[in-house]
Image 1 (spheres, rainbow, N blue to C red):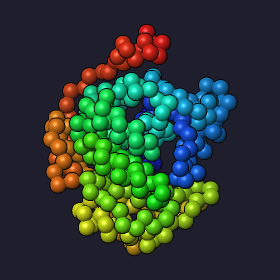
Image 2: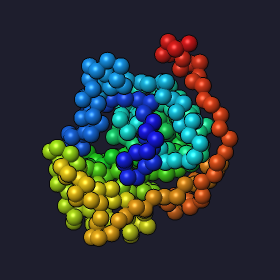
Image 3: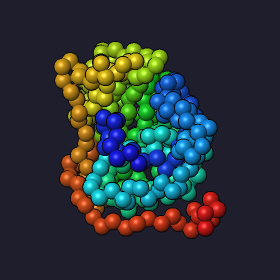
Image 4: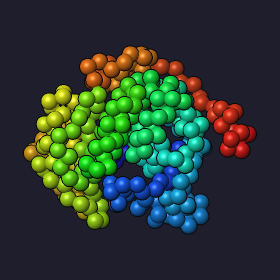
Length: 281
């Protein structure tokens, strides 16, 4: 896990899965793939296999070692709900998040259908944990907006959107049931330009629905030169964590405003069924 993440809307990252595959236009200039492929073939490097999908069970217990509460972006270098990740392994990741409950976890996916199906079925217990937030990536109308509709049908205590890279004007979107919106332009080589009007359109809708709005960056090839001020203002709004011992549901479609509490820390041990399935017993 990265002790301090450079991603503006989180504190740390945790990657018990590495690697992914491209499924939509937002993946075209994937920062994670660009980083991982630099080290393909380097003996002993964590990304010796490049961006190929790989489970990393030795990373499972990392959140339990953090003593102070953090917002943790789960699988910043992968997608937990991609088809190649076994359901039981997703459950193992969930059990760690359940036990290390002094943190807040941000789980982001483009595989909205699998997340919805699992949280509605076999992994429904995960959807009832208030310190685990579930979100989808949104980049355009064709691929991204349908993920919002799917997320709304997904049982979760906190639902969020990462509208990054924003590739076009999304028009009017249905934000019912959404608790947080992040917006940002694409960065790095070949970055596609975002327009201010597109961002302001989303901001106005967030204000209408009283949804916290976080503007991450303008992006571009040299993103630090472009900064992250929107009309001279920084938007750093984040839902306040709920009481981690509460199983209360959403009120009025918004995350409740309760302070974080620290509770006991129990070291997680992978279940016997998982160890047998992966040959690690």
